[in-house]
Image (cartoon, rainbow, N blue to C red; front, side, top):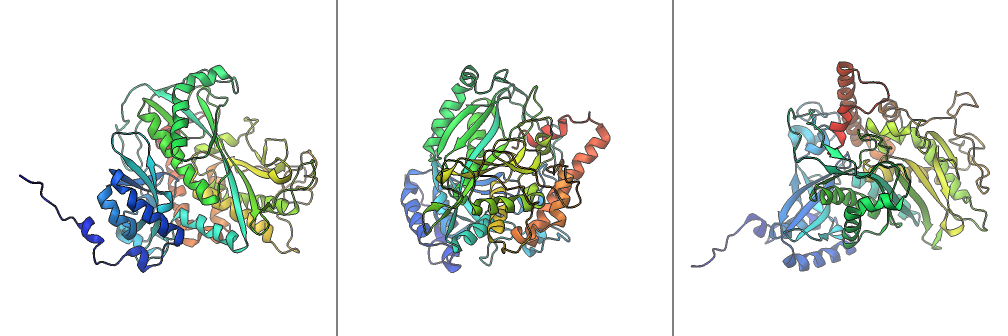
Amino acid sequence: MYARSWSTPAAEASVGRPCFVADHGLWDEPRKAAAERVEASLDGIDLVRLVFGDPHGLARSKTLTADAFRAVLRNGMNFSPGPFVFDTGHAVAVDFLGDHNTGVDELAGAGNFVLVPDPLTFQPLPGGDARTAWVIGDEYLRDGTPHPLSSRAVLRRVVDRYTRQRLAPVLGLEVEWYLTRRLDDAPGNTGNGFGLQGQAPRVAALNAGYQFNLDTHYDTLAPLTDPLALHLLALGLPLRSMEHESGPGQVETTFSPMSALDTADAMLLFRTVTKNWCARRGHHASFMSQPLLDAADPSGWHLNQSVTDLNRGTNLFGTEGPSGGLSPQGKAYAEGLLGWARELFVLSVPTVNGYRRLDAAHTLAPTRLGFSQEDRSAMLRVVGHGAAAHIENRIGEPCANPYLTIAAQLFAGLEGMTAPADTPPAVPAGTLEGMTAPADTPPAVPAGTAPDAPALVPQHLGEALEAFRTGRAARLLGEPLTACLTQLKESELRRYQAWCTHTAPPPGQVTAWEQREYFAAY
């Protein structure tokens, strides 16, 4: 007896056929070299998860055998555009069979796109029964051009603008999330369907919370979070800390500074791996901002950011002396963030639920469009001094799309730094003054607002969506992605409002709709 040698399309694809990557010149020299290393390592791999981040920031994947991946690495793989047309509850939000209004012809009839692995992101996943690797892909149209709905492509374009000016953004992640214990294994599929999410997982808190950074509270999480930390380190992620926050079982995870694309890729990997790792151990990790749990304190995502001058190797935001503050370039960057904040806000706080954190009742949450060194109700804080000076943007919710969140902030900051000298300030005079001293500054006030009234961040998804829809977001995203995101968010908001009309939930309380919509997926 002998084992039959099967000839498969995957094996044949690499023999005497055009190569999608080479034909369209998609890779630079570092990626070509990385691809050779990946190919050499595949004998030690059983399965490869080919992943991309959808518009909602969720990881979508296909799991391939290592043999199939050998051809896919250089030829790409067909993926369905479903993640581009379904909203957060898997309701069809973009009419791909009719007038989809996005300007992307390939969406008609749900035509496929090509996902090309980025060999620089190839990462073996430690543990598991099968030797599995993870790799993030870039979305392309069939003609080899970047897909207009690709979030990663948006961030690449913004980074390219910095590179052309010999600048490099540097970012650090601070991410809050909830760790709970599953009470049962029921999948929550009863009544589920397109736009009809089943029951959220039933969970129990791991401690009582509300003893900030208490070591004994962290110790109740340590049987999970300590081995999780080792797992994240084994993935090569630059983990700095695991900390217990205020809420019961609420964790903050921080990472050392990274480049922009590495930061977004790390956020996608971290959230996905954390959820999967905890689920395999009978627990549930959620990056939903305000889950429907007893005494839950909302979770946020703080994005620390600075810009390096590549010619000098110095931090553009740094100042001389011990007084702290920001350089003129740093202040201009901050002014750009404030000037674009409302129009791009939905990219950092994209869900109905995320706006619950931005209520004035939460004293540590950012509620105003301002800039401060100490007041945590301001959207921006200046942290550190000298070479370590940077800006902390505190508005993000932990489940936001990392590529779009980071791209939006880097884009707005660069717009501020490159604005002509005679351009009127995007925020009132005085908002950024005095930032070399440890004093709070007045909040930004929109035109037409009383001078003594603080400019609040958007209070709900509808407000943020209106600013996005009528603003200048297309300058960052392009018209197709702006139209697509608008339709996705409109669909989500319509379904929530319809549920509220039928159910009439108590004002100000997290609803069962939100828990079903976000708690499991995010």
